[in-house]
Image 1 (cartoon, rainbow, N blue to C red):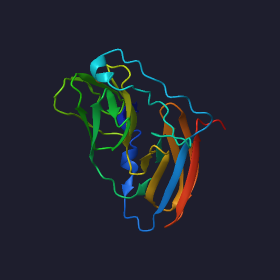
Image 2 (tube, helix red, strand yellow; image 1 turned 45 degrees about the vertical axis):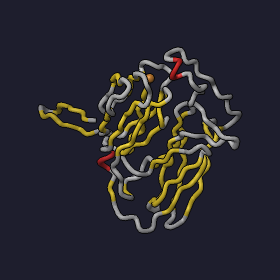
Image 3 (cartoon, rainbow, N blue to C red; image 1 turned 135 degrees about the vertical axis):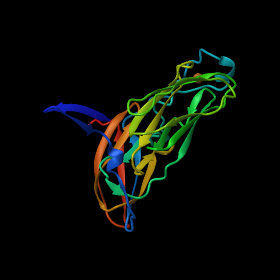
Image 4 (cartoon, protein in one colour; image 1 turned 60 degrees about the vertical axis):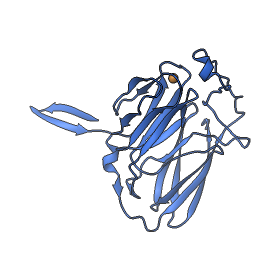
Length: 238
Ligand SMILES: [Cu+2]
């Protein structure tokens, strides 16, 4: 974000929130690993069925349930984003294009992580029209109808941000695009587990974000060639 200010007649341009500029790629020789699990604290809610009230022939083919809280039998929480918020240097980033698929009137994946400078390729695999709408502040917005058979739409990411996406035609279709300024981001799988590998030794802030359960942070110390295990429960009540 750029902020212009006038001070003593001179215009000063301040760069704010440009965390991607602060991350430095380097060779990590003695990196450690952070592994862990994110769990649901308390009794997880029962799966919430979605009322399909549009394009029922296609969207109502299988029963849809809300993705807002997905837990397995051990209370492992899926789709939590785990990242180190204060890491300034480490392993090389891979700038890539990630596909966001609209299929069965859902977004796949529900939460997607893409590096800053990478692209999101939005495809429509359904025999109907979707209209993706991104709620971004730091990145270009996209609000566009995509009839069946249309070519992919692309979002070129420029800055770190967690961006909500929805379909303006099918209101239950929601997802998230997390734009990462460094490679120390992970998404928990169906068992709630995650791994951050090749982390330079040091003490960092580990943040866990979940779309409906909020944020929790922990301090984590990584030692060279060692593995450290973290368990985080959400929602945070302490
Ligand atoms: Cu749609």
